[in-house]
Length: 269
Image 1 (tube, rainbow, N blue to C red):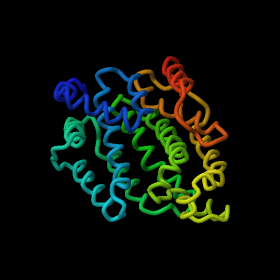
Image 2: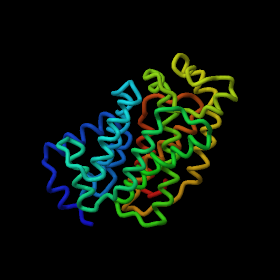
Image 3: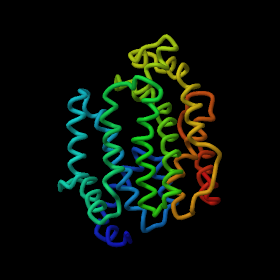
Image 4: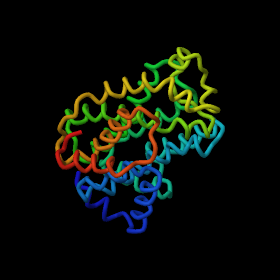
């Protein structure tokens, strides 16, 4: 469906607010949005702002029950409730116009609801990656017009981004006294989830080899995506670089952005 109507309906100020939110809280995806067709960028920004709001549920509410209440609020928005909100309003417009189907958005919410507890096994952890980050990548692909083949590829790339993102944010989770790492991998290293709160670097060193291997399997070999939808897959370029690094990753450098530019130019991720 053409997005012109959606883009025109967004007030310039609202569009700027969405862009600022994504630029501040998800700079990697904000940079990737720049490689999408101009008419579809507003929808991607609304989607990524929605993803940030879901991530905030556990950050803003220290009690799991309160986080679940916040996530239920977003579930109601996706299911059709009309709410005046800087992200909920444009998201509702996207859903109402058929630009975004509710299914991947509900999967993203379900994955965040599961984050109240650490996953029991590595397979359960990967299941969450295939539910949340995977659905985010698929939703971005849908906005850009992905076909079934491209959606299948984006599922794997999205799950890999979730693995890399988990490793990248272990310290941030520790500050929130949260552990989203698989318990069986921690057990094999003689650790418990609470160890992550006080010594996240030790936990990261213990789980990184296993999770890096899983992330690389999901990424597979770089391959082409249709140019029109490559922006949906570009976050995987950064995930691939993060997983290739032997030490905990720090701030992005110029080489990371150049890698994204090069991937976008070749439509290879």
